[in-house]
Length: 426
Image 1 (cartoon, rainbow, N blue to C red):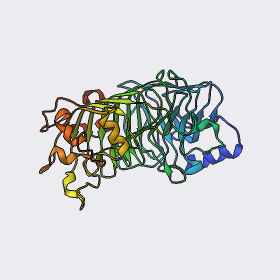
Image 2 (spheres, one colour; image 1 turned 90 degrees about the horizontal axis):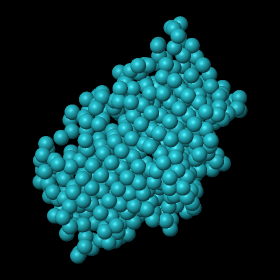
Image 3 (spheres, helix red, strand yellow; image 1 turned 90 degrees about the vertical axis):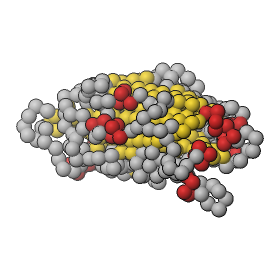
Image 4 (cartoon, rainbow, N blue to C red; image 1 turned 180 degrees about the horizontal axis):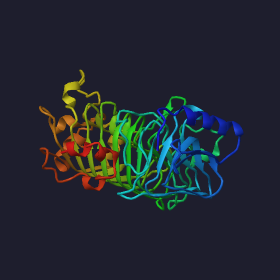
């Protein structure tokens, strides 16, 4: 199928759809080469169940919302492209509370969300014209649920969605809430400005419950965070984040599920491989992250803030710079290459065993010690993290790690593998 060199036509179509003022609108475009393939431009709120087939190219003309009581099914191998645009014109797929997304790809036929500027064609796993540094070209995937969160209220509005749009609410009291199935899904080149001063994450999970199945997901080349959890109880396994331009994995509002087999591949724009915040309200919650590999460059390994709670076990760290090169006059690092307890509350949680680091292995930069890596701003002399380093962390050389991710589970179907990035990780 012949591809346009820009998303201008689709932006015009999206503007037309919006001007009509109706929900659940779409436009069918014939193959410009006269073939049988079609491109379908979606826009607005889905009012009834839909299935998006893999033999058609699907275009997000602006925000497409899976409304409460509606199920959107996306077939394996389907390609969805988001148009360019910011703010009210930002394209994104949003699953509202009570809506369900059944996006079950396979290792040989993943479901791919990407930009209209991507020259990928039906039946392909990647195009040839975009790399991991091409980001902010469309929005992203937002899943919202009824599981508990810890915020100012039991339900709040997801960032970037206007307050008068009720489909942007998330949070509730149903731990087992079910938002669908997301399996073998790759989200690429997203993160456009969706609200004032706010880029959208590659995948946003707001109050998503444990009845939801999320496994084998990838976010590549996103302008903001890779995957961000806002509370909720959903368990996620086999997650890869490559080249997030803010944080790769971001946890907020007392997320209390498990994340298993996670791979972070940072690039020069990444801020933190892990950014972990504690509860914002009276509800506590503690997550578990296990079997993770964090590969960095000139960025921070992990930042624990605002009373962070959780357990992080079997973590391998490699490729980060030495934090000792960036110490200030108070012998404190500026964030590059370290694991930091950023506030007194997080330090107290660590001391009490409520923030637990278990079985970490670090490929140390030259002239760096483990004491350089792990830092505690509260500087608790008898129970600070530096005193405990021998209990949970060891230095290893590349190729000799015994913890971390199983990279074979990302072989073939991910953008990172198709671009040869997995080969560089030791």
